[in-house]
Length: 201
Image (tube, rainbow, N blue to C red; front, side, top):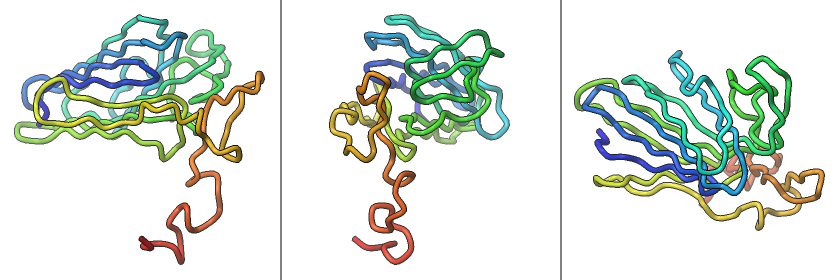
């Protein structure tokens, strides 16, 4: 069981994950250190309540905190370049969009970098976290414990700057705002370890 404060970095966006006493859940605090506003999206698994209402706006240097119950599982991602109104308004985000609404009830559209968590449900159960680019990359993201024995997991490199041309998602200005996952974008076996390539080293 993690008993340490965790730090999530997304495009220099920080989120702090503090687990409570064994089986008592956790508190997440997100901080935006990006030089622009982001719209974090949250999605809960296992029928749990949406944290942070499913999504919210987070300006530079702002923070938002919310509690998660024991056994909670879900994901966080940053949406960028959004034009959103209230929770029921139709809008859009250049990356990580979840149906054009502020408060997500579905996952973010790929490509989007993900931080995923599963909290232990009782005494002696472990918490788990990972950073996933399986849906592609839009901003750097990572999880780092501030104390305890858990280690850093993440990708804070600017993948957009190194994205192969065929995987780039450009903004209207031509700037690359996201990088598609080869797993989703290509139908080739080898990059995705499918069919005849499965198990090849």
